[in-house]
Length: 278
Image (tube, rainbow, N blue to C red; front, side):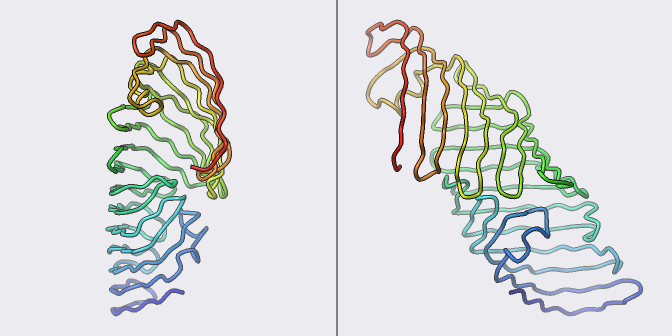
């Protein structure tokens, strides 16, 4: 499923100088052979290779009209690659632009990312994802030396329809061969905070828990009760099961100083469950 053509010189005892093209018709053939353990799709890599045969440098551009990995999909990807020592992965940079795709079933218009390679460590310098409802920016580090791979996101900033969410501590996430585990995080939003724990697999099955503390209801009420004004502070626990297409939700919520359309209701406690198709 891979075709490589090229021209140049290879000295078996010293150095090489090549340029060429590699066509990948099925990227899943390389699962487990790179730092991306779960991927698929197709692509084309225009490359140049120079230096010692034992550890040459590699640079070029990879393009794809269909590629996915870790539930991230793009129908238009372009990546500029430069790796100083390809065999030992001692230094490199990859700049990518992804258009018209989805991330865990959430559609995006554009996603840009710059990562630096240094052996078994990957530095995620800046990643930005946008669509007409949200803007997400994050950075961090990924350790690929063992499984599960440890992902530390030092800073996360999300703007969802004017509601700003930002991380309070570095988020710790474990990427295993068949699932993602949310180990530690804490986020600030609307005067309060929330945390996410649990796991999600690559078939989009979820077993998640969200704890919310002292969240202002007002900025969010238009999503739940459009054309109504609700004020107050909420503490809640949300259990999420099922998958993205058939979620199962269980919510326990307490609202203090609740005001509905100007009517003071005081403190409210409620339970909500949902099991259906989106």
